[in-house]
Image 1 (cartoon, rainbow, N blue to C red):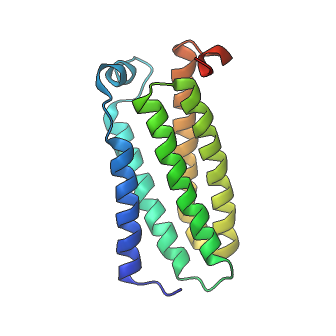
Image 2 (image 1 turned 90 degrees about the vertical axis):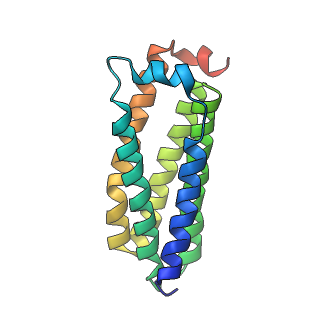
Length: 161
């Protein structure tokens, strides 16, 4: 597959759509209460982090498209799969306010992103290196979600409520 401007634009549009859909939620007082907690980073921290995350996702996928490695399309499908998992966790967390389920879905998302990183690494060292800050960001958000879940009651019982 040849790297081109049209592929870059297509990847950017796809990622912008995912970012828009995952951010278009009625957070309201529930989210404000979490973000205003003394242990929580400020809201701008998440805006900056997710903006950088999605930008790097586009760049990594675009760099991978310049590779002539076998199974390139399989790797790109895996990459798109992690975007679906991003939508899933954000809906569970922001729309349903289910912190336990959101943590569970995000854990799958984080682990799956590790699989995507490995698939990228096998095809392009440069593209996989671009994904390293994404993995670090996901690990940081996972720790924040763990804290939200624990402070909001934690325990297996909250997952099944």
